[in-house]
Image (cartoon, rainbow, N blue to C red; front, side, top):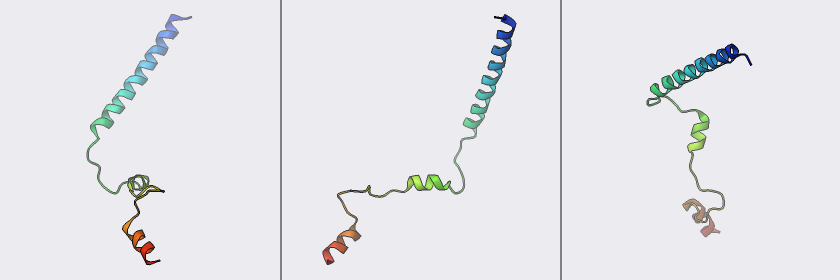
Length: 68
């Protein structure tokens, strides 16, 4: 193995790691309160409802069953 080549590879890796660290630090600094409308996938994930097969029915469903 060529020691010079190993050193060159390690220096290149170190430069890439330092660049990744700087990028992540910039991202961490820029994290503040987000403004604007959230993306549609996030809105869908936040919707809440009863899981299918839930024992407690919604009040509208109870009213429909008692009329029948």
